[in-house]
Amino acid sequence: MADERRGEWGSRVGFILAAAGSAVGLGNVWKFPYITGENGGGLFVLIYLVCILAVGLPIMIAEVMLGRMSQRSPVSAFKQLAGDKSLWRGVGWIGVLAGFVILSYYSVVAGWALEYTVFSASGAIEGADPAALTQRFGQVAGNGSGAILWHVAFMAITIAIVIGGVQKGVEIAARVLMPLLLLMFIALLIFASQLEGFGEGASFVFGLHTDNFGPGSVLEALGHSFFTLSVGMGAMLTYGSYLKKDDDIVVASVAITVIDTLVALMACLVLFPITFTYGMEPAAGPSLVFQNIPIALAQLPGSTIWAVTFFLLLVFAALTSAISLLEVTASYFIDELGWSRSVAVPVTGGAIILLGIPSALAASSHTFGAGMEAAIGMNWFDLFDYVSSNWMLPLCGLGISLFAAWRVGEQARRVQFAAGSTLGKIEGLYVAWLQVLRFVVPIAIVLIMLHALKVFELLGLTGAT
Ligand code: PFF
Image 1 (cartoon, rainbow, N blue to C red):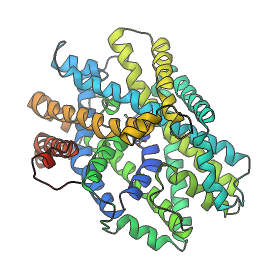
Image 2 (cartoon, rainbow, N blue to C red):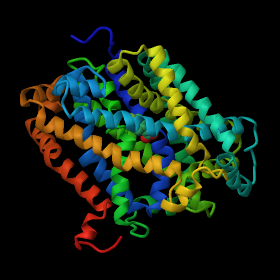
Image 3 (tube, rainbow, N blue to C red):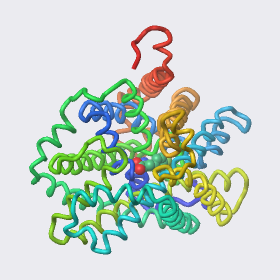
């Protein structure tokens, strides 16, 4: 029986929607299109899809499974399953730390979306000049104090929801908002398909272009497959801990992955046609969605309503993800240190607000961090994003896969995989998943990391990248 104090999802679909709410966020609509642009398009998309299928999905199944087996949040889960002093706890710690780092800059981007919602509501986008809208993003992100204020506002909303207890709130919010977001994207897709640049945009996303694709792109695709599915930091483990014994983990994980991937591809199919139609730059970086969407919508009748709806949905998508990030960090203090929810959430949320300030200032002319940028070519924002997505999530994901594949008992693993699931009872599928988790996932993660550390280059096995 589930621990009654921890609660359970209200329904099967409630878990899928809440977990999809965590997965679908700024990663799909803001980050995926812009890194696709920077890495040259189609080939990057293909590698990303391979990473999702061969690495992300198997880890998601493992992570949700460990949550249901332990009925705990990440660090306690490893204690419960491996022993109080076990080194496996470190995997949970990396996850909690990743949550802190990710939410600190995630909330800055969500703050920009909040600002754009208010700006759109003022009617200023209607018929606005594309050049002015292009410049506007620089002004918003470059205004340090404004960026901090919107970041604090977004965190305040997240903190308020998580204090109130996440399950009911998240489940209900996700039930309403996820379908709305999908509908909005379908409408935008219809709009984009009529643009002159649709063919060029679609071919950018699906053609196998190799320009701008380098070996570093593979690490980025892998890192993003973790980030976008919310795996490798215990968010799915925590959500999985609220599942019932006979819920179907395999089908739920496949459904979450499919929804997440569809939204990411739709976002690209909306953004790149706009980019090419208006002669913009696909490798524009983090500004992509904030420039392109207003420019395109400004031409439409009723552009104010369209723009407000779009940015509001983006804020909501970010919110359901941010909630899961804060829930993981706060639940560490609740489960491990015995803090009450009403203390743990504001304290961790407050720490995240402070940690986000350097990222909020990154695009401004503020001199904070300028020395670092000159030295390593990354500002705080880029550094936090790079370290968390490309290193912490894959490392924690590696731990999760090794633990689930090698340490968990065969009997318990089989029961979890098959529970309540027709798919999960197919022997071949179980064996394939286990072998992928045992060998393919760890080898892929380690190789990609060794490559990123330039180990192959040092050994003279590959040329400089
Ligand atoms: N998956 C979210 C997105 O794509 O925006 C980001 C995220 C949420 C990452 C929760 C990790 C996480 F635990």
